[in-house]
Length: 221
Length: 221
Image 1 (cartoon, rainbow over the protein chains, first blue to last red):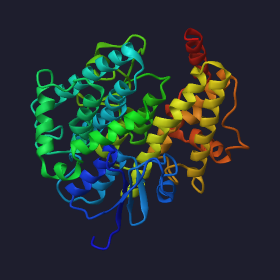
Image 2: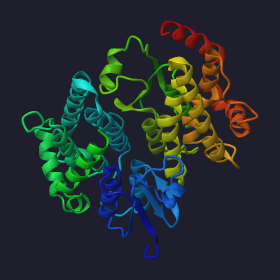
Image 3: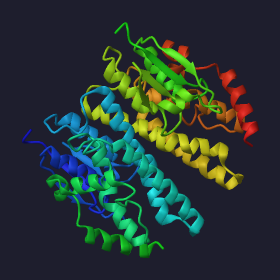
């Protein structure tokens, strides 16, 4: 597959975008990275994702694929070499899809709501909900190193938000959610995850992310 | 696969639940149907979907699978006989997942919002958004009989809401969205879809659905 064109329209502070980079690096696929400015979208982004106008967009030989979880499955189905992103067994695949969807539909909106909430009562409600979701994920991790088992898989990639971005949000908002006493499994997962060479290579430095979000939070106060 | 146990915890007025019935019928899988009362959830439902506590839940040899789109993929991957629910080509599969997600994340919430909206301005806003989404789907259908091409596939099953439930909502709210002059393709799709023997068998009668939702809307005014 040497003459293939693989291009990613992405943005480094976006964990959705970084998900795709993790998957491409896991599979050892060479790709061209095109940095998008989410406040000033390029004609290419608007052309290839006219529905949502959002990064990430993967272009494979000119064909666009949008939505990060859809892209992850596309990568796994197109480049079948190991490591696999999804397990082989249909029930295990369904569970991976279920948990990735849980992270996108439930955890991320709730945790983002903590930052966006107006007033103490609304924030407390979001924090309570977030803690319950973390508890759910803590239970799901029991007896496993990664959500994917011994190796990083779809759910781990989807959960990259928890390993880095959540800590940035905690620091900027001034709260602590993911503590070792309450969530020992998730904290150990975070350590293992961040020590993986692929993840280390794909994720931005925490300080850089902190600076970027501090700046963004100040602009949108 | 004669000694398999396939059981669906569902509810007939739910298009999420009916999606799974369509897929099971398409594949010719015998299943036991357990009618759930969504206002009085059974211990079995709470046991097998403790996270969302929602129908549909598919039980395959005792193992639960939740979330209707996840279940559809599971069915397609477990019972590989024709007809396929997803196409074979990875890019076509990604596009099917993209559109099914668009229907769930965008169209359904917007169209439901028309009914839930408070006041004229909010309703007008939701109607405008719904019309844009229908336009998007109209474009996607161009040159095809079904979203899946010549045959019903994942997106068509996901879109069952548009073929029946949307009309019910229109009638009860007193609006018209899906008209032949504005959306000839979608209207033709609806006719073709509703004429398919599998769909006819799986979908409830419109009058029964109208009565049920009229009743529900009155209770939750």
